[in-house]
Image 1 (cartoon, rainbow, N blue to C red):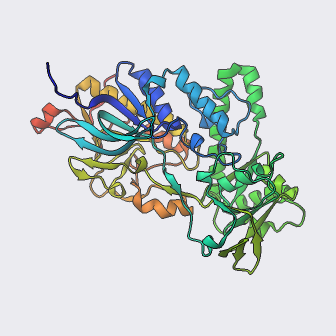
Image 2 (cartoon, rainbow, N blue to C red; image 1 turned 90 degrees about the horizontal axis):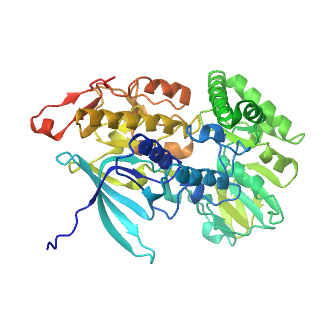
Image 3 (cartoon, helix red, strand yellow; image 1 turned 30 degrees about the vertical axis):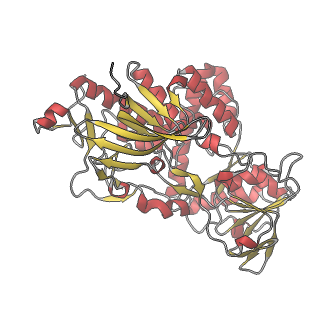
Length: 510
């Protein structure tokens, strides 16, 4: 009888992250490869990622759900702009319908990933939190890793240093860590920031019996804000005409084309776009409101993300008098609020620091290849899905100017093609190599503060396809036409490596 302890468990594919990207990847991979051993590991106690983590009032999508939802599963709710509970329900339905529940391991946090070329596999070190809150360390092996960890640090959001912060006697909350059930009824609230979170929070905090007394949005720089109906009436008509599935797909493509057109017009004709957005704001705001002070950004449309106000709810909160906007800089926090550089004082019982995120890929996993640390900042993205010099690792990074999830369909089909090619030819390793002298630039195409803070820590993109990344779906789709396998993606097997033979960019057999 052997007393030898069992070795690490092996999986053909390990998906890291149980948010919308990870669940989508699991659905694609398991459908195409029902006999492969696949696991999805999630650091938290539930699926959903962003939609389960954030608890602030009104948390919702900033994209329409007909493009944010999966291609393979229709969005059935009449709300095109949906709150987090509806999105979570959709993800839970996906897990049930596609038989993914048994693949998911909760409270599993990957702390390191080490690739061995000799073994052609990743060795993942995982901290597992048991029901009694004790943490034990496990090791699992993976032929492939699909990194679906999102793009920001879950543990902490970004908050600047504010002089006098310790003097404030009220509550200070970052939206990323909103206490569940927090009572703000009757309170004077100052929300610092003017991004999507602030635009969502403010009208939501003024609803119902537990509403705040007043909410002030304090911004250093204005943001472009547009309105969109929460319910897509054209979708309702298309669904009645074409049925649930046909209506969903028709609406999806309607919105893809509409979004592409809007981005093209706003970026190519910035002066006209400014005038157009201003005209919308003037109609939505009270007569005499200083639109040019509070809604005239110093940058052009889509140099930073545009914000969305469903049914104009943010503007309505201003018209009704429950919300106000102040454009100024903070001098310091005081015991009772915030003193501004202009000398004005904003009284507050609650200060919400909607000041952004800290970007981070792969949840901070310590990654090595054959003992060499991977420097993400020196890596170049291959087709926006793999890192140069990093074998058998797929990366889920969505779009800045289209719905994030539109990328998942392209990634799911691409990883399936690569895995099938490897199975057909007996390969165990696939790694992209950027050609010598390839020009590179930032992976990010927006100048938002949270992106600029982190751009030097993130991978780069090239200056031409297949190393160039597009941040609009219809443009990026060109990067995936035909086969994703070319001379930049190199395949090998252990036997070939022993013979010092490397196969480069074979065609996928018909």
